[in-house]
Length: 154
Image (cartoon, rainbow, N blue to C red; front, side, top):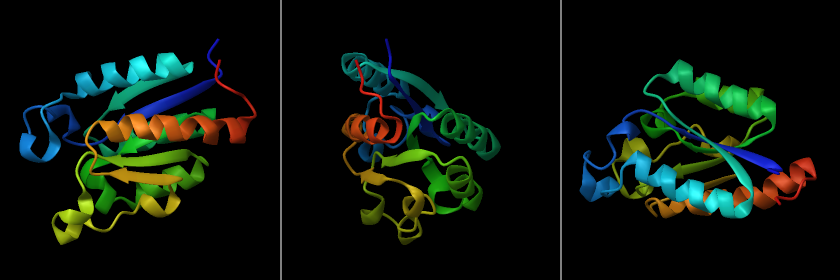
């Protein structure tokens, strides 16, 4: 039985992982990251929903759906990190439990990437660790979800 559920939501251009700027984002594809994370989630007894969209409105729908269902969210909003007040509002409006993840270290890149509209409403932020950041976010969500729901993963 799965006691907790996590939605992994990826924003614009993450569908190009493995071919887009591998020196910055690595050579793993989004499917590679999903397979790796599913294996880890199965071991933790966590259900996993994995989604990606290049459209802001669709990402808002995903965040609202997960948040209102009480699921944890691993969220890589991509470029919307730095521009979307609407995504921030979706997190707060749905009372979503979010860990913000970035493959690259956004603070070591262009100055426009240093500001995140998501970070102030996220439970935590992981950046610069590549795909490992997703696994660390999953590990972090387990006790946070347990504290919020009172359920322990089986």
